[in-house]
Image 1 (cartoon, helix red, strand yellow):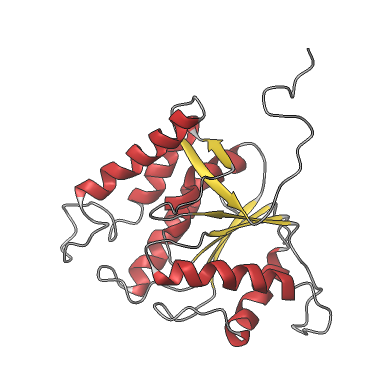
Image 2 (cartoon, rainbow, N blue to C red; image 1 turned 60 degrees about the horizontal axis):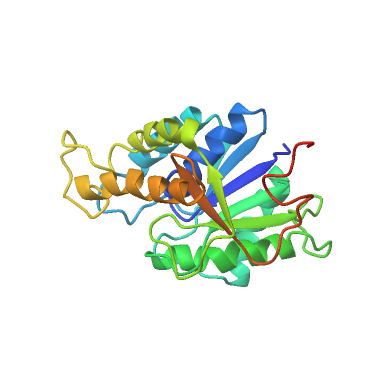
Length: 238
């Protein structure tokens, strides 16, 4: 399988929180996308591993992604180590993405911080011939980063207009019924299951949308500059 975009999350639902609208926009425009969850979310206060796996697949169907896989690394113990990179590399070579979307540093959960370096370095080593996984080497052209929870101190260089895809993002998040605000779920209340957190999803998307003059947006970060043909606003002929 070769996909245009591989979105990687530390836990099920990270991708939906950070770039769910963007993924729906991509798949609805004919781009192919897959999701890789580094862990099964086994340390979550609410929801069993089996529940979360079912929820994640439902969310993937809503977003239109081609496949969703789990690397089965330890929840709560992600680390940028050779051993964990070796577990991620086969997925990068299997999906062979043109670009990768991964968690940004300085996020609320320590696993998100670890996933930033882990995915970045695994992508580099996935391109080395002498690391043998029985697959052809592959290195994605670019990695862009997103914040599942809170933004850091850096201003994002990109904000993607997801105005027409924000409701699909919410529908994908609702599929994670054990995790987010859901009065019918019997589990213990958590930060992300609160109504305030649910309301903040729309607030943040509206904030970033306002920064670029649209209704809803999702920010992206990059380790370096990205080339563009012309400044935004001058793409069409005069």
